[in-house]
Length: 455
Image (cartoon, rainbow, N blue to C red):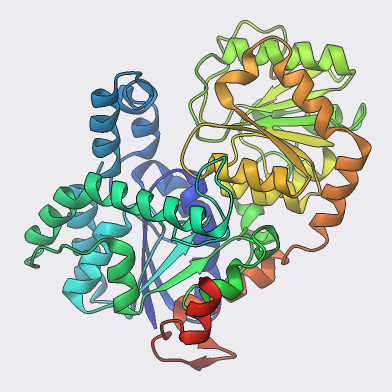
């Protein structure tokens, strides 16, 4: 079978899907991979022969549109920004994906993540392709997981999701129909979730069901749960990030620093733009001094070089805070005692698998949801990212999760998670429509029993 993967967004949106692509190739499938231009080197190191697709996600996340306008106190400016971000890069994605399919000679399945799914679904409809999507958090209406904080009860939760879907459709309807027109498709009055349901698309839930009890039974086989996706050891070694390869390069000495003292607190915000790196480092240093702990700060897509901190790459093994670039989570996190992160699904899964309690400093999208789910599981606390630089906030949050009882709950929870290899295998099964090597037909819509459970 030939699978074309259309993967846009940040590293956290793309890397889990690349693990599935590698597994499909291992099984003998043909995998054609398109990723955001800035992530082509990452996919290339994994050996997937990627082509650039859509727009540079790092540039978008660092733009004034995201950093300023989406956070504006002016409601009109914020709505305009939300509408622009929702459809950012759609023209480039449509033309690039069309060319990718032409060059590949067609496909059996079009695989996408959540971002850009509207365009990918329209292209698949135009070409008559089977579609499969990878979701890294709950994004469809349900009565189990609330999309925003403060909502309680199944009826209120479902009502909030319904409202959210209407808002999303109002923001994207014009842009979606513009893409459909460019593809020669008629305009639609039906929002994407309903169209995907009617098309029999498979929406893989690539996170662990233990964190959302009851949701797996409510949604049924069309939205199969797999567990958090992660690269295997061989793929991680090809990336060569600190923790997997020789202790050399700009982050030389990391292994010695980790071994020289107690397990540190990991601090990393991935692709999220930290508004004031200097203020964050100051808050980390203050928390370390107050609590008597060390901290390993991963810069991610941020530049900490001008933060003015006395710590940083090259600091001695006795330094209480060390700043590094991107690290291999699977190798480094098990050597830590807690984590402070943005609540992205990939980082959340890696932190949970390492058995660490967490402080989630969230920005937007699914991050507040993950913060709430970790809090409900008794393994984390949740704060707005901007609050972590306020005096005493980070230290107080860390004190909560460093409590021995919280740490013990996190360790026990890690033992209940689906192992990464099983999660990736299950996702590959769902994407290819196979179970035990047998090709299945279209996954049916939930039957009456499933719909009853969902209510």
